[in-house]
Image (tube, rainbow, N blue to C red):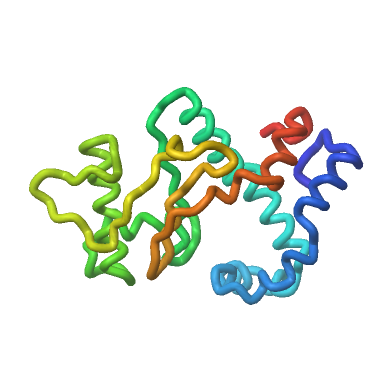
Length: 187
């Protein structure tokens, strides 16, 4: 396991929060096809997918939640994005922001992502239009993380064909298990 100072109580809480039966369908998720090609033995390994989810929450998802929550509580304008498009690997957003729209798999999504980035860089607000540039028809309002109160902090979720505003999935038990055991689950 990942936590060198773990106790049986902590591990029981982690495994109760991330039950193994939740991972039986993960092997059929196309997002994991790359992993399965590299390491064929993980194809039906629910333990691998469980460990990957626990670690992913611990070092990425929950950490981004803690940072966004802390910033918003201090009054800093904060936005949080969940990008679930492209090849779904780290930096999968890059082609949509840094390549010409026509050179991507989804030109409409690429135009929207560039619009959010330009707006943020120029105006420090992803929603404010940049003077003289068109606004992407795919772009929807990106809610500030401060616009709702916990436990309903909102994020912008971007998928291949849709963009939605929804509650941050990190605001539940999956992050509480680490925050409530910070002496064990320290990075």
